[in-house]
Image 1 (tube, helix red, strand yellow):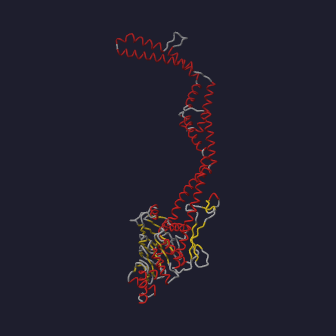
Image 2 (cartoon, helix red, strand yellow):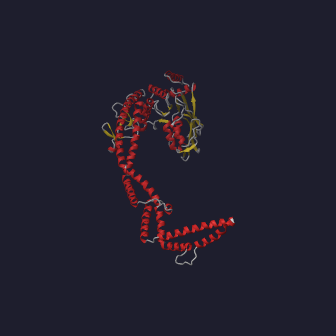
Image 3 (cartoon, helix red, strand yellow):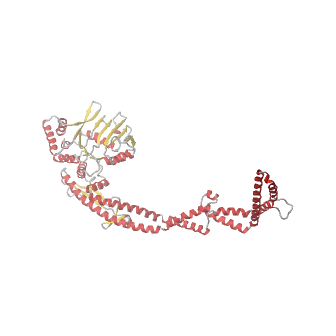
Length: 595
């Protein structure tokens, strides 16, 4: 038995309903009462909790708001619980608290697990929690996508196995097609990028830059541009250190230091401190001699060659142009590392160019892989369609058998599997000799069709049946799907409209059967249906002369017999009606249902 999903609902200031509490238990709950009262109590309030349209007319005259609160128990790992937690809701001991307020001005607010949420979230949760079948409100299985999902669950492993293989192949095909599309769609941009990289690499290869070369050229240009001034300064410094051969009487630093060293050297034996100073003067003399020699060599080697200067400047201009286009930023350029950054760019660009030039080969590989996957997908799609077709035949026969017992003896249910021609050959796969559109669930479009009587054309169930017939059709479908459908709670609003007698008993039996695997709530006016319920709720109206109020109570034992008597004959104390009510309860018990 499924854990109770709608354990408790609080309805406050909703129309004429004031502070009523409806407890909906696991199993089969029948809601009865005066015409319209049960529907207002359960269907309208549930509709609000499930994201239905808010209407200011629901607010009682003189009240500021209408409030509906529900406590929904969810099994561990339920999709609805996961979605609610994503929205920031918190579960209370495994239960989800939902509330909806409607103001007298028509504004509404929704709360899930203590968090304010858009009303649209309630609609999302409703798809996982409750299937509503009513005279004017049918949900769940009227949606083609839900019909396909339900058929797949009904088929079991026969569909689940090929569907898993199909989805894996579909995922791989989607990934391959996306990569191939990127390569082909951006082919022009990639060709342009390759051309730019190739041109840049050719420019750099022609220049043959060396790491740090731009810094070396900058230093050389500065030296060549000031060659005369450098030579003159070196000559003057050399003369000051080593003397001028043209002036024998001139005094130079080397001679003076040499004289000072000789003076100290003569008396160094008399004082250690003076001897240390003499050694230091000897070192100075040697250093002066070395510097003077290097200055002479520098002056002799300095060449104020204008041709060389022009060549250096030209080389600098060439490298500066390349560095601005491909090299580093201002910091590298200022530090003389522009050529090094230029070579780093060339290395990375060469790798990128090799990748781009390999696109043609990659496109060929991906094209071949895509074609192979499309062929594989065609085979899997055909297998999947065959399995669905077999399950659809069994399902149609099973639902038709159920309808025979629900006062629709001549109705026939069919499951149509249709394929849509692909707009372009490249957008489809070949199945059964046709190129058809495909998606993550295969190529089949599943639709439930109803032929209400012999000779009638089968039409979609939403169009082929009246309101009362549609509820019975949905009941038959839900009974056949029982155990495979993911929705844990079903609400049937007057599913028994337009029937009576034996058909009503059969409806009660099937609702009870559905309750073996799900929670079932039925708003009914037929005692034959209510007798099969595990729990019986009665909505009652009271009038104090100015305000009509509605309340709800659970009846059992004698109270339940009285309610069934009222439904049968309009007289709770009629002996004949009571006998008939007791007989209905006994029949339900004999058919295996608990009172």
